[in-house]
Length: 234
Image (cartoon, rainbow, N blue to C red; front, side):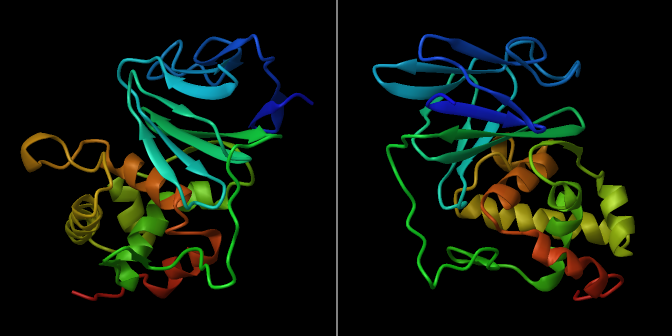
């Protein structure tokens, strides 16, 4: 195994230091024959002793996080980010499908030291506190990813499907989705709003990407789906 390895759906790829490794509908890692996905979307290459992940697409963005969820970044078209952690998760959405792959480094530049008091999946992100029903909404949208084992792809439920899963009216679901996105937008989570204060059209996908990579929701929270089914918190 070389210094860097990529895991997607249990298949491993090991680009050499001289390779420019393309990821997309075509390339070294052919993700999926999805017409919403760029032929070349992401690129991994080593420059001046550092591995870089670049977004060479024109429309799609990707969410990047270290394995602990402590660091998260949004990689917009034309941007690039150094790969410095031993384990980096990359999540992106094209059309109705969300994809995830992992990048592993043998010699990372940074290491995360977990503390005993660290708690994954807390309902407080900075100043943001979520009610159980708001968190259940996030879990309903992220359920396919939370139930999936390892990297790969999954479909994000529509608002109507997620509302039905919770036994809620669609109007109630959409109201709570507005509130959740607004809370996260106010503390700097990008991609949840469009221009002039309008909510982004792909906010469900961005919300799921953020929630899963930051460990805002984990498989341990799946019990909220039954707990909050049909419950009205107002």
